[in-house]
Amino acid sequence: MALFDNIVEGFGSSWMPTVLVGVGVALVAPVVVPALAAGMRPLAKAVIKGGVMVYDKGAEVLAEAGEQLSDLVAEVRSEIDATATAAADAAATAATDGHPLDG
Image (cartoon, rainbow, N blue to C red):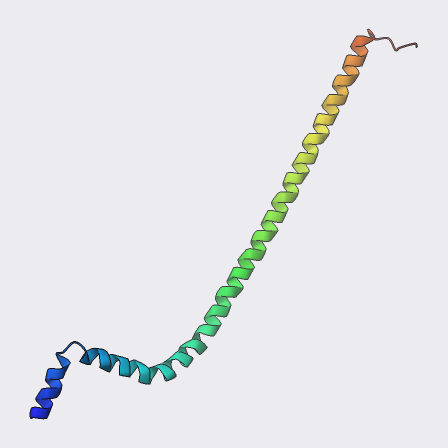
């Protein structure tokens, strides 16, 4: 009984449970870690695949938005050019008092 009492008494110390947990982890790790790694691979692939799909969709949306912005800028430039041309024509007409220049 003294041996059993010594073992039970040893669980009350601070280092014995730590040692037992360490030994348990060391014995179980070679079996559990590969199983977890094998199970995590499909999950990791799914997460990466989802990320790639989101990235591709985002790139597509940004490209389309850039194209629309480019179209708007071209349209505005065209309107500015038309306004400038009309203003120049009006200024030329006012300067000659409506008569063409007869050099």
